Structures are given as structure tokens and as C-alpha cells.
Length: 172
Image 1 (cartoon, rainbow, N blue to C red):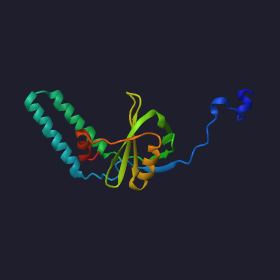
Image 2: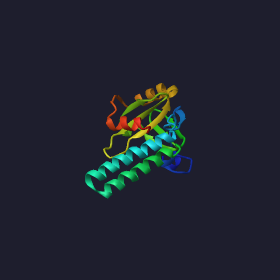
Image 3: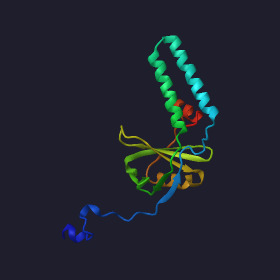
Image 4: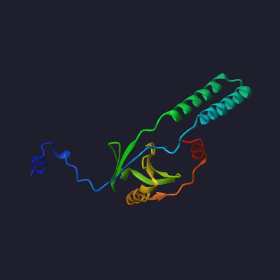
């Protein structure tokens, strides 16, 4: 029996896809609970202006001072930008984020971080230089999502490091 007889859809052997299992589907807006007031931006600029002034007074280096101020502007621009809505779909084998599919076998474990009314699961890849994937979800969906991810990979418990705590403190 040749491939044309096995797959009668006319697209050849590579086009067959197994029927998708029932998948969890949800939408999320990352950091939707963080509404920054104008005082946040003023504080950011003032703190980074003090830091850059301190560097200039200690080192008399214009380059470092300029880099710190450019970073402050970029950080405040990133804070102003409205987050976009992300659509997720998850089953025991595949995670889909906005029509892009990720095979769960490519990840060794996941870490869950909870916030006041939402959560994030970070999938850590098997490949050393691959980027981790973050999944945002509401508290209502967290149990089902964690159970589905737990069927494919183990969950690791990790304390937030200093950088994570700083980013959470400033609202990212």
C-alpha cells in the first residue's frame, strides 16, 4: 500500500494530523492587575536620575550616565505600553499560544508563580539556549492548568531571586 492510498486527502503523507484531544482554552492579559499611576513614572525617573548622577559624580563617565538614562526611558516606555490579549490552548502534549504550537516534550519542568488574582507558569526547556515560555492564567483556571501541565512534566518549586523580587516590586 503506498502513501496515496493511506492518505486520501491529496496532500501526501506529511499532512495527517491526529485528532486533537479536548484542550483547555483561555485568554489572558499579562500584568493586567498592574495599573501604574503617573507618580510611578515620576518616581522611576527620579530614582534613575539619582543613580546616574551618583555614577557621574563617582566616575565622571558620561557614557555610563547616558546609558542609565536611556534604560530609564526604555523601562518607562515599556511600562506605558498596553499589554495585548493572549489566547492559550493546552492539552497533554501541545501548548498553543496565539496559533503557535509548542510540544510539551521539549520542556523538562515548570514553575508556578502566584499573584493576587492571577498566576504564571514558566516552562523550562530541555535545550540549554532555548527561551522559557510563560503562561499567564487567572486563579479560577490555575488548578486545571497545573494538573494538565503536571501530566506532561514535573513541577519544581523555586524561590524568587533578587531580580524577580525587584521586578515584581516595580510592577513588571
